[in-house]
Image (cartoon, rainbow, N blue to C red; front, side, top):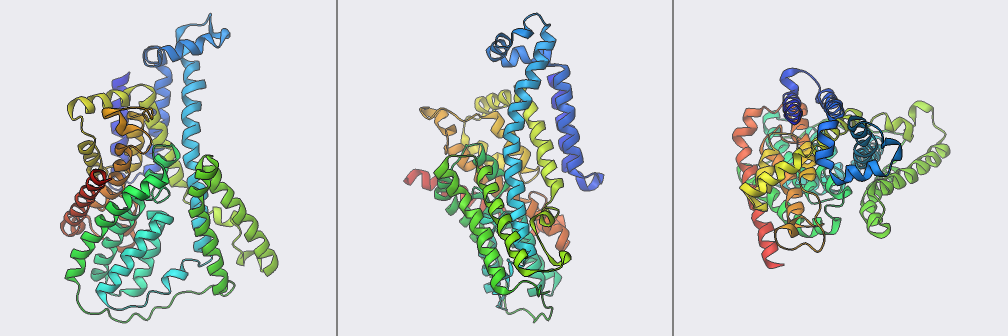
Length: 463
């Protein structure tokens, strides 16, 4: 049964990775994979649960007298239904609710033209100067928003600034690197850091303290090499942006500040109240919802011209939410059946070096989706007790393993154009070919990636 689960997971994972050649949306593959694994786990629960859950399973049966006279198969199935599914779904829903709230706030800012507060201020025509401006804007925007949304905003801006498609590829590929690097050091900058933060593996303070500088180096080094190739100024671009006459520049600035300020407030909210981050993000969303209701009630516009929250929610990328649900549910089965624990034991025995393990995971994240990769690793290595010493101390909250994993999983995706959401978006918008990126930017991303790891090691040695 365990072998069957592993084979199905690998096949499903391959289907997700080969989304474009197969012409089957990865969300469909992820949902089907997750549900099939739970069905098989439920069918084989009798042989898996007593062995894997052990004392916890026996205590569950003792706490439910109605199960005393039932068969082991029935008892195991009830354990799967009432313990495994409930616990994992609770953890997963925290992440999904946070993502839905954050994505809605970002869409709210975008639909009101809030991002023009940044984009309208970039007017330089010098190629090198523009590269650095775009790189740093992308880096810090992706830390506050997310690398997917930031990539879309910056790539669309790029179309207004650079007319030559081939020349635009250099800037677009640089945006991919900057977006992935920027998302790695912020608790809300990337789905993987959100997962680690929501589950309590890392705190926002530790991420900023130890991962900001390595992430910055991983961006600056590749962009410096790209900048050395750029000379002269760009040709003038006459295209003008569409202006929403119903929203004044001052109102755009207000919504931008409220939305971005709300996203920044969420980590502060968690540190003060110690409540899960999804409560903070939904609190901010509720506040913005009330604000926009009052805002449009005062404007007296036609319904079609209004962008109230119910209309904005329809713009949220729900297939992505369902993809995360499917893949996280699939990983939950591997965790419940003890497969991930077994893999962790093998890695510890064969390698037993957290730095090598994290670096390899980062390289792997450029080939496979980093969301299921990090979800699997979190299942493999539970958070250790704060009093742990020696090797186990690397797995405590804010332990070296989790901090470096945040960096490696985020920045490592830059090594291939298909290794991150930002890269896939760049392929779609700018039609960047896999081969061109592999030839021109894979080695640059790798240099930045390794340099960032080196900076992190120096930080640990010094501090």
